[in-house]
Image 1 (cartoon, rainbow, N blue to C red):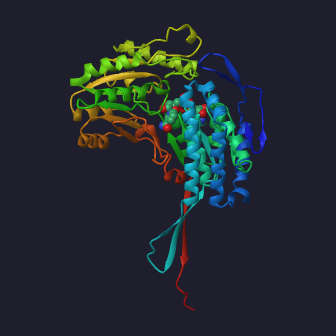
Image 2: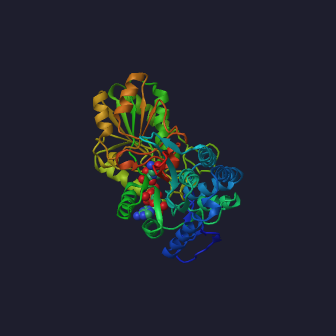
Length: 479
Ligand code: NAD
């Protein structure tokens, strides 16, 4: 782990990093104890007060962020390899995520250099202003599905805003955060401004959120963990940004380009083996085209190449961990018990070369109602539940009948209908005739149980700042 300017190794209770594609042990990674958490927060608390960081002018802070982006690009191979070894994403996707992470640093470098303060309308003979200041120490806690991008989306804006960060990466994907921290030090980030402490949620994560010098928590992960963190933050009266789970509805109307829709739906659930918070995991198909769509979807799913993530042409790698595959398999059992019909998949692949990995076939389930457990709960795997709908009103009611509200997709040729439905669906992102298109310039986050706050976009910097009002008297006091 990196605490202040010191690389520390702890062999006691080290985390075993397992390659989910082969089952082999990659290496062991130190697990932070409460003492390490205290040391990391102390280092960050000290660093954020030092003139080297506190007084660094925004354009100079921006230069460091630009150099971090350069470093990420220069070390792209190492970063993509580490992510692939730890969570099994296919090589092409790991490379794309490294490039995306560099772009995130560049975007927030530009924001850092250009975002200004405001002179607000005065109501008397005074000047009133709003300036923005960092919270101090920000805790960033991240999941395992896309550590490259998720961590960049927190660290870059938090640093752009002038904070110091303690990153607690997922226990399954601890390494890319460590490499980025090394790159950041080489890029000239002062010691202690970015600390990385791999460890478990139960020990390191909890201690970090509860620490009295942590002034803001930025969390991405499951809804149950988010709720637990939010309740500690409520008690401590500190702000939180929460990017949580989803059960996103994907909708095909009968006038849609069905081939494009089927490809979009398949990509929306099977890319990354379905381990994406925005996975379109509930598909609603207008009844008139239901059979056609199902037939094409099953054919598409069966054509997806599930393979070792570093194989040329692999479209889906393994599930990120054996424990997560176990949870998916349990959910498939639940689907069967609740009357679901497995239209394709529902099992591990049979190829010998994949037998030691945590692989699972793309799976399509039909015949379950919207209230069934696999349709209600986030599975976080390559599992799509397909339902039928009659008309727009029926669709909106079913799509919104969920605790989540992260994303949605609509396929239709009728732009008026797309507009109405997009506005009626309770979700933080709605895609129309596309899916999973994401831009760092556009705010992202969830409605309902999918989270609080918005990352990305220029307001992504404000998430990590508090505003301060300044009033200047202008008239000459009477003597
Ligand atoms: P998780 O909630 O189990 O863990 C996420 C992180 O939180 C890990 O680093 C973990 O160690 C830590 N943690 C867990 N409990 C904690 C606690 N009580 N206090 C402090 N830290 C704690 O999630 P996961 O299984 O790693 O990731 C999958 C989940 O993340 C899914 O639900 C997925 O939808 C969600 N996710 C959301 C987004 C988004 O942007 N909305 C993006 C990716 C993943």
